[in-house]
Length: 170
Length: 204
Image (cartoon, rainbow over all chains, first blue to last red; front, side, top):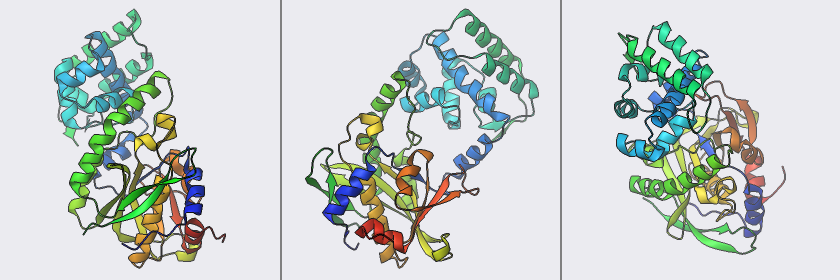
């Protein structure tokens, strides 16, 4: 490749200009088309509280089972940073494998979690409504209080009761 | 065929520059190594940000080892800045030209930057005092030079995450939100005059 040619003097100036800036760019059509489709799916207004319900559900359920993030990551064989992302970023759509692993460790139904995580769709409106109600009642705190425990238990009951048939996995 | 050339990086609060190398064609193994090197640093930084209830950088979940798959295709090429045996910044380029959008270069072949990221220890937001400054500048410079070499006249374009828009706006034209981008990010382009300003300091 041809040599770089910015002078040291100008580079010093440019480097100072860079200080404090985040340096990142992301492509128009990254090869991860599946991820891209999911991202587009994220923009559907109705799905936002459902995804919030998913991240809160994982967090609450983990804490209800008295598992640290590290312990759950280890048991579920999921990267620690991905689990952090799942709990902290409702816009994040985990891979189906991750959802399967978490569902197994947290003893939650897999098809329903695939729907909540944005990996599958279903026409079951009741599940969506339950997720929205759960998200609305959720608050991020370190320890679950009675109200949060009740919200979690109710939602898990609905999850288990709901039949999610003919799901279309993405 | 990968080649290396000397370049320099700046150390904060100091005037002298340190020697580094631009590697113009990284392998998949290089990306995996960089990911393994960056991930623990990033995780520690995120824990600190989380404890301090501060926002996380928007690109924090990027995994360059996953982007390595792109190198199976001739359409992509990855470059990096190496110093002290560690990758200080990475950039993935599309070698297939896109059409320029700036009025002065509309339709002309333009080099597109797919991904660009500075190592976590070079971001003040993450570590307080960055190890090196100018990694992003060096990578942009490399993109411009590569664009010239490919016959694209130094023209480059990219989509910026919101947190980085301020940086690109210093040297590139902000062409606004791109409705075709999956995340509706803003598109930036650098034309010939801006190249002269960026690389040589000559005001347009």
